[in-house]
Amino acid sequence: MVVPTHDRRGLLAVTLRSILGQRGVDLEVLVVDDGSSDGTAELVAGLGDPRVRLLRHETAQGVAAARNRGIAEARGAWVAFCDDDDLWAPDKLARQLQAAHHSGRNWVYTGEVRIDLRQQIMGRTRPPPPPERVAARLPHWNLVPGGCSGVIASKDTLAVAGRFDTRLRNLADWDLWIRLVRTGPPAWVPSLLVGYRLHGGSASRDTALILAEVELLDRRDGVAVDRGDLEHYLGVLCLRSGRRRDALRHLARAARHGKIVPAGNGLVWMAQERLPLPVLHGLRQWQGRHDRWRAEAQAWLDQLAGDPA
Image (cartoon, rainbow, N blue to C red; front, side, top):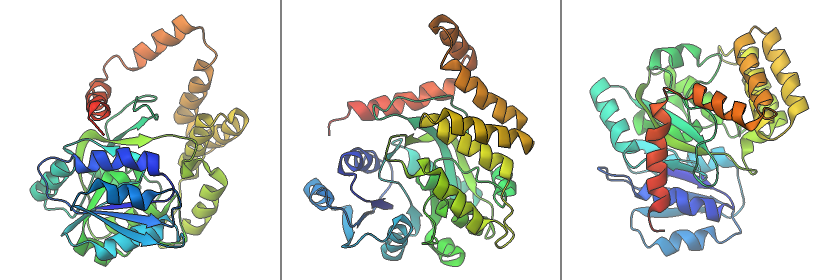
C-alpha cells in the first residue's frame, strides 16, 4: 500500500499506526517521502518494521507523482492508498479484499467520517453511496468517499487505467476513478472505515486550485462536471475554513444550478453556529437520532487513540 507524505511527521505517525494495525492481511507499506525536511525519513526508519519501505524524492514532485512511484514499486497484486493525514479502521483492508473476492470486481471503496485532530467525528455521518450510483455519477461528480484513502485496486487494473495525472493535486483521485470505472464497476464495503482528518494544512481548502483543476477535467474524455455539485462542495469547504461570505456565494450558485436542497442544508449549517446552545443541542440530536454509523466509527477511532504509540 502507498502512503505519499510531505512534511507531516506528526500526522504520519498516527496514520502509520492505523495502517500497521490492519488485521487479517499481509501488507507492504511504501512510504513515499516527497522531499520532506522534518525528519520523516528518521521517523519511518525508527519504526523498525520490516513491512515498511521508504522511497524518497530529494526534491518534492507532488502527491500524484509520489503515488505513481509507489504504484510502480508495489510488489503485491492489490494496491491501496492512504494519505498521510488519514486513518483506517483495523479491518478496512480485510473487508475490502473480501468484497473484491465475493463480487469479482477489481476496485473497492468504503465509507468515511470527517474527524478533527483529536480523532473526534465532525458533522453528520452517512453510509457511502452504492456502486451503481457511484459509477453513474463519476463522469459528472466524484461520489467515492475518503479521497484516495478509501480505495483499493488490483495492480493489473491500474495498469490498464493508467496512473495519477501529475498536473492535478486535489482532483487526481477523481480523474483516476473515472478511468477505473471504464474498466468495470467498483465493489464496496458499506461501512465507515476511513477517518478523513480536517486541519489547517489540508490541500482541499484551496478552492482556487480546485476550480483550476475542474477546468482541466471538464469536457475531457466524456467528463462533464456538475457545476451545482461543484459549487455546493466549494461552499462546504469555505464553511469549514470560516469563510462565510465565500460560502454564501458558492451556495447561492449551487442553488441556481438546481442544487436547492444541498444549498439549503449548507445555510442551515451556517445558521446553527448562531443558535442558542439548547436549540443547537436539540437540532443535533434530531439530525443524528437514527445514526448508528457514527457510534460504530467513533468506537474504532477511540480504540486507535487508546493504542500505545
